[in-house]
Image 1 (cartoon, rainbow, N blue to C red):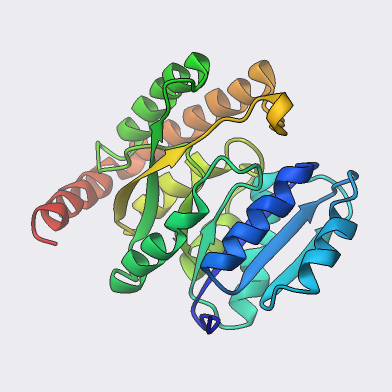
Image 2: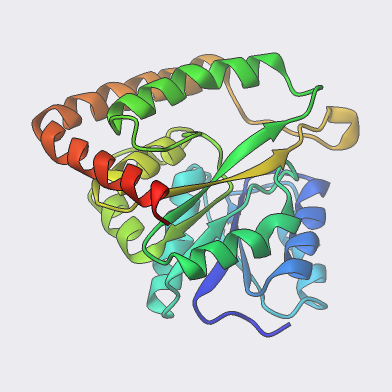
Length: 258
């Protein structure tokens, strides 16, 4: 497989356990290059990935000394990718919830629509936690309000292709949004910057602890982060409502006439 010179896969990870090696191996089988960002992990991930790196060409391991959050980890990789001339990055969760087999499809759509962000629209299995399925509807409603219903189907799902230059510019100019609120913040602000969304359905799977599943989601802390983030976004929307409405109209026309 010839490594892409424009599109790469970024996998942020914090103490993901054995699922990380599985996810990385599956991603490398579908795309090159793949960069893993160890976000202050203390579970032996570095040693486990060193073994994988010995047999997987195009795999790079980046490491942050302390846990700084998913957004910070992705931004660290985006900055490095920008310096090396990459234009787009697909973010993939390390815990195996996302379908690595869909990486080529997402990358292909991105290559055909380089000005857009490609957003995964999760298709939940019957055994998916009800709290996750129903709770995200609230966040999605607020994200739709913040974009005047401009076409973001899911504001929280982390399986996405981002245009690197615009994403870096936004993140460098934004305080916070480095943890659970990262995906929402970046999608909304990319829309405000004129980056249209393209939504692609993709399956999502939740693993039980016995299957190696690990979750760092904290109900009170992370929901508070989202409440705070949506409040800030709504306040930032008000002075630019007319501009965002025009972007919404443009995005709707683009979906009708791809």
